[in-house]
Image (cartoon, rainbow, N blue to C red; front, side, top):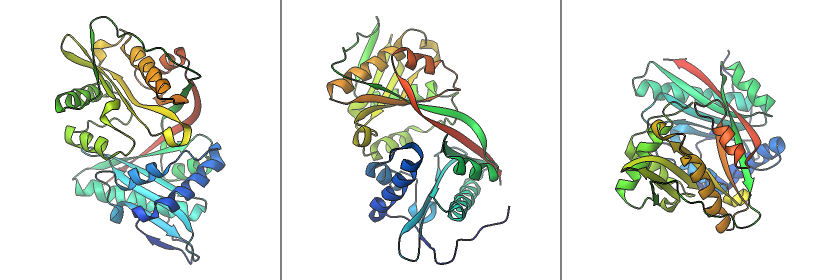
Length: 318
């Protein structure tokens, strides 16, 4: 494919925190045209720009027109200790979108070479209804990897707090290093076979949690059986500002402890906590092709899908 150039009159520079409001306006308008709501907040922008390991000078691009209006935003983020690079591009003009995607792919190659890799896997999430974005990534060799459904349950009143299954010790909140390490251990073991999983080192996992503005350690719960950590619920406030909902970012049970009702208990517990906090509902994402029957579990407790996001991937030899 021929390398594209930006249309005349457009300029490019790295993003900065001072651009957060402009980026929010651009992405919110794009998303609203597609799915009917912004699906993006100011916290989301700031968290992207300050993610540990993300360098705006090399990993992000803003495109302005001659009047200084932001018309394009893109970024490339290398998942620590892996060969996976996540990318995103937002632009209405197809030429701008193509230019941004090429920059993101070029940056992915640079990162791969810097880390001595033979190839990098580049991931891009696309709303199911975004025909233009799907055609764009297909033109650059991306193929569909899996599908994520965003699911929600609404809380119209108090939700009873469930009783832990027999023999289960609950660690509510992760305020000490031992509990955080246990949560990290369970998370890595629970999601080892899932699409896009990265076996993230503890220090990187810790830094990512500390950097997220919508997270605090009170929202991380670990379950222990016979002295062994076996399940984790990792929640945050990512969807509070725009949907007034709690968010279960990760819900995992190690393989040997599955089938004991631990995930169902943690899920119902999250519902009770969110309802008590006055949240309108609870949200989570589920990979409908993962190795556990998670979709059936979530539907069985009343959650319903309302947004579909397809994950696309391309492998770039170096």
